[in-house]
Length: 111
Image (cartoon, rainbow, N blue to C red; front, side, top):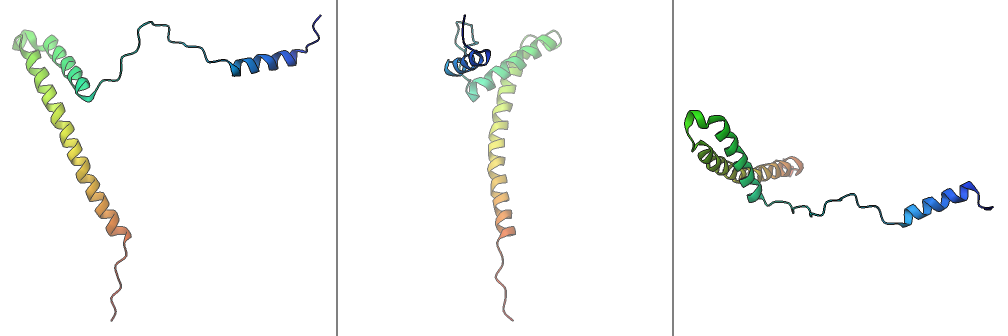
């Protein structure tokens, strides 16, 4: 007969669980794809938009609507990113100027 108490067995199990490495739940043999760059993500989104436009509008506007839409979408996304970064820089300058004016005290004039 074993002389160990149920409490002691439970403590051993808990200690063993803490000491072992966690189980790996990724059973696929294929490693996950690294995160895409901004250019790749923009290209994939433009491609999907082009395919969607081709599926919806190709009978009405012709077979090139998907290609034209893809190119247009990629150009619009790229220019939107550039405008966003420029606006972000401008907004940072404006906010910094407002903070400087709000929190700096003006020297008092002597009469």
